[in-house]
Length: 115
Length: 113
Image (cartoon, chains in turn purple, red):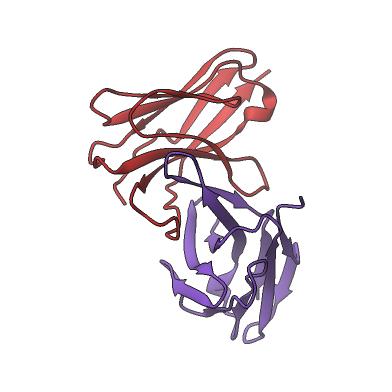
């Protein structure tokens, strides 16, 4: 299994440009997540999805959109890039552990710079 | 989510045990204690989790205080590859798994050769 894959690895955007960060998982996990990590900080949840066709906002959703048309894919869209969106973006998926809790698998991240 | 408190950084020597503490005095009875770690330039990875009893797996051990207000992640024999930021996170037991993890700043573990 490839696990969670993300593309691109790096991207530089100009202010006002748009882009889509791609995320795919091949573990048949229902739950998927997008996080951002600013320098020296922990991760913050942007959006999550409990299955195809169902998404919901996390802690910091402003400026982003998501869709989930298949179990495998969960792209994140930036419509009008702003310098405040300069960050490292991580996608994750999860499954249920024995005993009722969940383990999340993370992708390698996309480093985005907006100038 | 209930709050956790961890030291900003810790240092240890290679091949020695490491004890990483976490305080969670406002933990509720339904909160699982999770540990993740993040190696440099990588995404976080799951280490271990527990509810009430001490837990062991191939990566580490988790010691949970009897009152559950603190826990300790134990790396039995640290290697240079264990240098990472370690996050202690509380998760609600009844959650459907759909809610995300709440990451603090974690503990930056430095391993000296």
